[in-house]
Image (cartoon, rainbow, N blue to C red; front, top):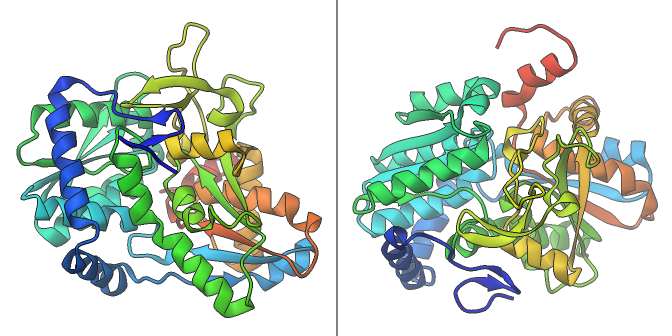
Length: 396
């Protein structure tokens, strides 16, 4: 699937300043050394089981299945993990790796705040310093998560440049890394950036698809007919897809944030509207303007509000192995409300994009088919924003 230096077809690579090369090489060598080390694997498994609460449940959504007709719907409940999302999987892996490398400080970017909360959590657990960069706009949208990060001991730095959202937080975190490489590990939160980050994050998140496969075989005796997940940079989707890539009969469907529509400028649907480019250390698809500059993007979801997509997703798109579909704000909000009222599960607005597409296609499958939707996080953080979207005035 990948070639030398983290290439996925033509995508991936290491497009970074010379000042970061030593740090990236050090990280790559450390990961190669530890990823198959029995002691490292045992320590990570213990953290997953005893601290994060893995394996996460695979839940049969009986009411939703009956209501939609067609395929049986299963929900992979990453929202039940410690800290409330899939982000803890990758962060525990990277924090443990950083500790083995002798690093004492973690830095991270965050959009919806879930990766920031997970990084602050791991830093508290391991006794490490933590700094999180978050777009100023996102600090307003996700004020609860800002408080959670600070409560956990992290310094949260609002980024005011550019669109003051996720892409700008990534840029600022990378700049900070160049300033203080010796004791600092950049805990990147998605399957993006320069090699080896897309591979590292995918590998730590692949526990999701590993569990889905085992749980579906145990519960039904069959693999699912489709796995559906939301996609921004793409970590939960890559984790959900990875162990099914060779299972050609399993449809892999990524749901992008279309914002106010792919026919508008207020969208973050990279596969639907973007083209090949280089940004944040990788070659992939990005939303760009007519001059090839990274375009401002928009989504109601701070976690999907990114103008690119991870290079392995770009490759899965190119080869036709995975499908990528746009989902609008309105569709996601309706799905947010639908799952809450139907199954009593409030999903993150990111995850609601995947729920929305599943509600559209479930009836196209026969009743013996099954669809797994990854609920990448819980929706507590989004309730105030969705209430505002619906015109309700509530206090956060």
